[in-house]
Length: 498
Image 1 (cartoon, rainbow, N blue to C red):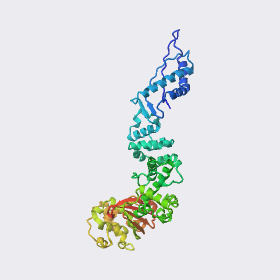
Image 2 (spheres, one colour):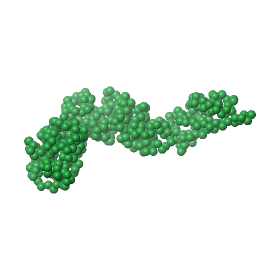
Image 3 (cartoon, helix red, strand yellow):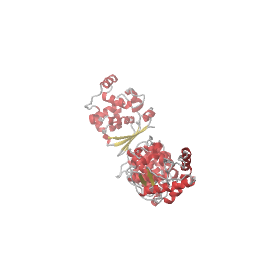
Image 4 (cartoon, rainbow, N blue to C red):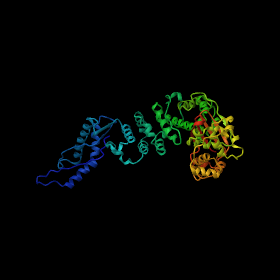
């Protein structure tokens, strides 16, 4: 297809026998009408015969054509025919000359769009003349531009992604896509073709290994698209790649929220025979019901368990070495686990050691609380102490760091250790409306809450039995994945509220 973006015509009129030039206005109106109404159709026919590079996309910056016409002897159709013939020859000649500063060639439309997106990511697209047709999108974020180009033409998604992957730019584009962009691309493309049932896994090409899947909130949609493209590159048909990509992304999200190694090892070994066995792990998840509905017909059958095991293995969710079942605590002061990320942020373990952390946690609970917080072995464990070490740590001499004078003065008035008050103030600063709450109020409403701790080789899952300020804690980002706790073996902490 030949498309001319802009035509600039200059008409030179020759005087007639009387020495007067023909009517300029009349001639311009006539020739402009030929350009608008007759030339496009006539040129299309000429170009179809002249074009030899089927499917390729060319961009020509400028093309100069001069022609002579006798307006008295040629009607409008004849003028259009002469004009089209000269234009087709000029274009073909420019293309035969090959790429230059005035001509660019792309293998197909996907190649052209991929080149534009690559230059867009590199920050040079809007300075290049060949992308003039995309100019109305200038000013929009790169992810939104990609969505607006790919969603209306879903057939471009895979070839564009393939070219960007070859140029190491696909991941860069994925990370620029916002949730709305991802939803638009998925809903108009893979989501429309998704297969309701997956065929036997053995009949499909191998699953990709070592995919760079993301973690954290908002990663599901990006991982889903990433998996679809990776599976398609392995030769999976699009409907099966879309269905498998969506379920694999759900498994990845479940692993982020419930990363207990023993559970994923059991799935990878096909040892879980019914979805009821994993119902507690799915409780409280936004898509827990959908995931349970998908697993329910698979797990009771050996082939289904092998299928799920293969997905888990491909996603590398199960640990390489055998793992033991987790230890469990049911402490009355499970809420103190909310302070562990703050202790990590302040790097206090490096300054005061486990004994100092233990004394800070006891202060946060309140030394007059019942039962006594020092009687809860889980509090000592959170500080990195064994029960045998805890008793000596309660009264150990600690080299405390200095605190701001205003914190020190407030601590004297509240009869709280200054460093403990510093920790509490840092924690409360992130809670809207609670920045100046008293230590006693924070202890009663937040820290002195029962629950249970599930401690595995690499994870700590804390489930609080109740939390009066649950909404406030959730809005402050104090729930969910909280990162690794260095003094607890680098285990990743996850906090779940009722």
